[in-house]
Length: 256
Picture 1: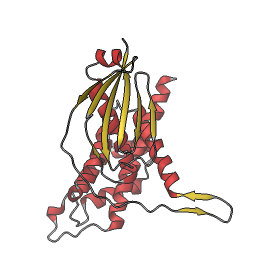
Picture 2: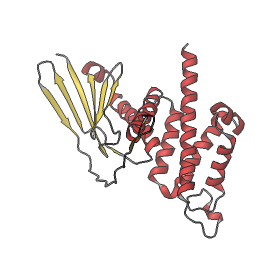
Picture 3: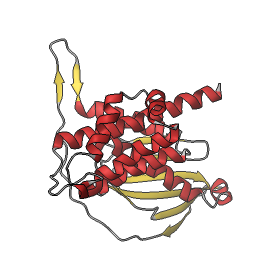
């Protein structure tokens, strides 16, 4: 008798994606909404691939990391805690795996919707959701690229360890430098402004701030200002998004 395997993940905050996400792949479908992700796989496909559970978990992490790139907000994603099989006759077999619970308290966003005198609607939430989805879909398309996943992991590490934020964000530029061979090639291939590349290095390495990679060289390092933090984060995002576009463009060229 045929069956469908259902994997369920819990995550927080429950509105991390701000809208329901529907994903359709050749071998599974996934719905992400209200603190829960659910994947549905044909049991024959699932049983034939013992690594599929871990593969889906990694793909889901990549989607979370792509949203984190836009929001700069941490998330908590558990491993699949519920697995069940739904048979054609309606019968269900359950396997429950329990993980420790973690509760996080967060402040919500304030969303603004403005209509200009020309009738153009500026909707913060709508625009934010659309940007998150565009980035997430592109990351999902290339989530087999280990280099991309490493860049996203560096950005996530910077969010989770703010005391060493510049250390992790600089890993992104350093990795791109190595990937393309030198600064000029990286700047050219990714179309990143040279002054933005240089200013990023100065903030991460030379400014006497506590988040700096070389903070030990300064007697009394200060906290980075909100402007400095914003500039470094935005440049790091720009670099990752530039690599993502480069990857997509070159993959498309190969496919033609």
